[in-house]
Length: 193
Image (cartoon, rainbow, N blue to C red; front, side, top):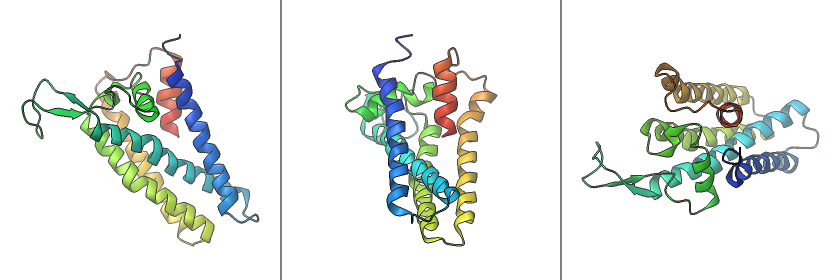
């Protein structure tokens, strides 16, 4: 059990709570006091979504592009011998340690799975800015807010499907569902957020 719940696991959970608190506090600071509970909840959700994408997934991408490990074989875009990004290169920060912890239940995050990196690029550079735009739209009471929410929700559903459908179709060889923490906390809870 100590291997499953480590200091990094606790830091991951605490970082999620801190990000949620930041989203809540931003709703208090940016929305008018007269905002309805529905608008406040939508603002908090989209601010939380943007912060998760920028902070956690952005740090994953940073580690992918700026942490390197030597590869044994050349790839399409690599020379021989080449180093490739690895988010699980020796952790040099809390964010890379958090990325390392999330590789236990889903092994594709342990290396340079180009599908995962491609989806995360879309999430960080398109999804997060759209989530911030939605927060602005909610604050400004723009009529097109609901359109942008549907656009983002569609993108999130597609991204979630493309993250897990290949695993389900191939027998989940990269997913470790052997214990409660991996299945329900890391795979279900964090990906449902």
